[in-house]
Image 1 (tube, helix red, strand yellow):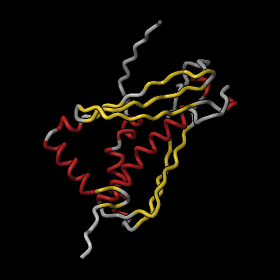
Image 2: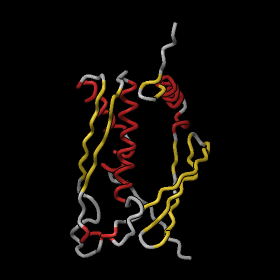
Image 3: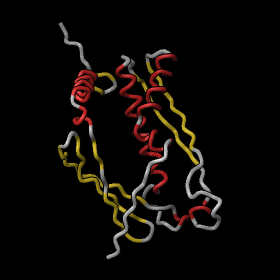
Image 4: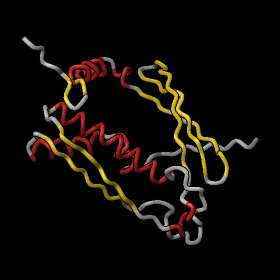
Length: 185
């Protein structure tokens, strides 16, 4: 007799249920702290390093870098995505985890899943040319495409859950209190 796998869409649903149970019993285990450090590399180029994160009070080492640049039309050298594209990629990636996991928890096997996001900003705000124009987006639009063995109602439920529980959806849809600190060396 073959054992039934708890993996759906590459997500171990039994492991996820165990994590949910542990965090429910001990909320401190669910505290996750992320941080990055970015250095200017010349011109409009920067490199962001990820050295680790904390979960449940434990440090987990990681080592990644994310390079950003601007297109030549915005005075960059066009060697990497710009910060706006990385922002949208972070939003999409976070929501993707939510959709894939949500579908797995509903027993939905996905054939494909994608998110397309766009937004328009007015450079007059960024350039400080008009104080009435914000430097960022007033709105962003995104389209989620799901294909799998779920019903339209199941996909709608997963969609609602993602909008309710995705950290980056929340971060983009709600104001975040920013606490800047300047150090002049």
